[in-house]
Length: 268
Ligand SMILES: NC(=O)c1ccc[n+]([C@@H]2O[C@H](COP(=O)([O-])OP(=O)(O)OC[C@H]3O[C@@H](n4cnc5c(N)ncnc54)[C@H](OP(=O)(O)O)[C@@H]3O)[C@@H](O)[C@H]2O)c1
Image 1: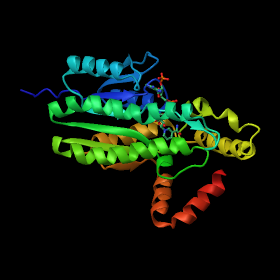
Image 2: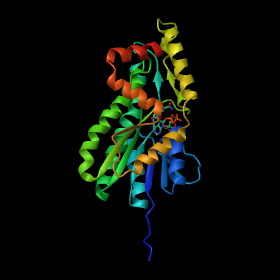
Image 3: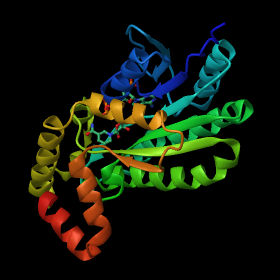
Image 4: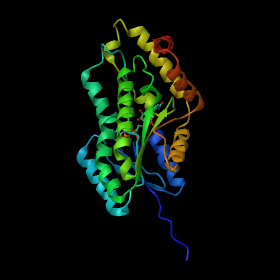
């Protein structure tokens, strides 16, 4: 008699739009049971949409418990929810910086800490984080966004070593410019207007916006994540797109002074 293959259960945060939605849809098309978490619920064939703010520990706890009770397994957690703020370091409010860290970094911590007991209990599991090339190469006037993604990067690498004995693996997928609502939702620092930074910030942000809107389709990221998920041994880091692979290779071999000079020329 043929043995029944159990469907893989995956959880994607920030699944209501952009990369998260593309990931959720792609994994569902590939036969996985997909739970999509976001603050706004949505209707999408093959995705169970659940209202869950990644910064709210109680909501995260209840959501994970609900999924666990129903499915009795979690194969993959995709920590994807996030947003960006832009502006000069001098003029950014601490309130906005903390708000972004709360989602982009502490949201990842929250989801991970509360999912780990389930993954350990079942004796396997994978975690993929949607990180960013901007977490490796600092971008002026996106310094705090870069800092959130750099935090995710280093956190995930340390975590990977901690949970290896439990057969749990962690991978950061480094994403470059991608055409999503991220651009429109970026929160711009108002204090930069009429400041010494006004012109350079405007120029810099307009370049970023153009690059993002001419960037890759989110499905590209979904395909890379699916490939990583199916690997027996996921790498610690995987970059999306040949151009970004070259850029990150150059970042490794070029003198830091030169690299920062080039990025500075591009964005400031
Ligand atoms: N687009 C790019 O160029 C790019 C490049 C590199 C990395 N990334 C990263 O990719 C990830 C996805 O961004 P995207 O480009 O797909 O942007 P997006 O279309 O704006 O999607 C962001 C998602 O995050 C969710 N979200 C935001 N705050 C949340 C919270 N507190 N709790 C739960 N969900 C929350 C949003 O849903 P709700 O508003 O419904 O909660 C939405 O589904 C982010 O981590 C971003 O930093 C994007």
